[in-house]
Length: 449
Figure (cartoon, rainbow, N blue to C red):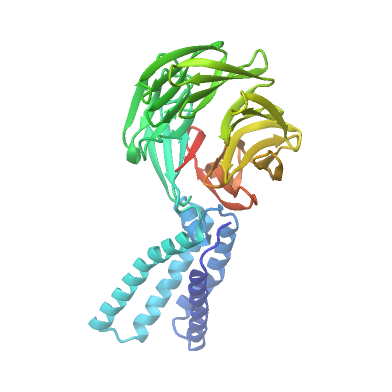
């Protein structure tokens, strides 16, 4: 859980101590007895209720932010705590009014000092977050959607405390990805509708792009767009618009097209044959648009990545590698532990490969290997005890986990729609975690920019 900054704790404790001394002085001198007795009761009970509220706070809130959050949402104990503190301020105002000779100059000075304190808090708080929090330099965007609801929600945050919500007049959005060419815009993908959507910069304009058949994936790059149209269970069409070689063509495939990646000369397509329990990597020559090689794998696969001069594919029980410099020779690399399932996430950083998989004990492994596929580390984290793991991705030297809440959570968790957590990829130390808002439809995917 996040804690409030030390300077704020010092001010808070100093206020409580000064109030206690002031109350004892008034009671000893028999000044405003009834008013001071109520203030003494508030001084005892308001901090206690504040502590009770703070114990159940979310990870992305400190104690004071959570108190205000709960009070705004109508929590009786939080409302009482806030009212108690306001009563103490009222007590101080009445005492100071009777003990200080107020002049116009002193009133103006006091108002200026109060204004400076009020305006200084958000500035100091922002500086404190910027220096303490690793999440303030990124944008985290989430898509909420459902096939049978016509409204989706695009929600963005930097701190995990303040969320910007943009309702969209479209349903059935399963995934979101950044537009690599047009900064600040996003692709919204549905595998059931004959269209995909481009959400323009500042998340205000939604553009619908019609497709002949439902889209299974979209890859965009400089002067290159690759799309897969799902015509039937056993028939997909790969559409390529290649500006570099001035070619636009469609290639039919039997089976399901999972994803693709490209180099200057080639496009590599992962073609999954579910009925045959195997996958094929098709190699397309970008210059002529022809399939020049089909490389069979012994298992189904969901993702691939380029690692030096090799393609790496997360097949079911092993990693499969294809050597691009050695006539597409296939090798298999065993996971360090027998996996229950790969988790469709591969990442290359600093000439090392990171792969995730889930073991038989429902723990997520982050497996790190060098260029020779020798194990450098194999670290584990437990799957979330609440909710369903919706998406897992690498980005910016972190591993991100998105948990989708089911709607049957109790207590504090019931107020939220899911949980977003980031880990350091090498130590798996949790860097931050925050809960995301609850909507009438569930969160589906996220993207980090």
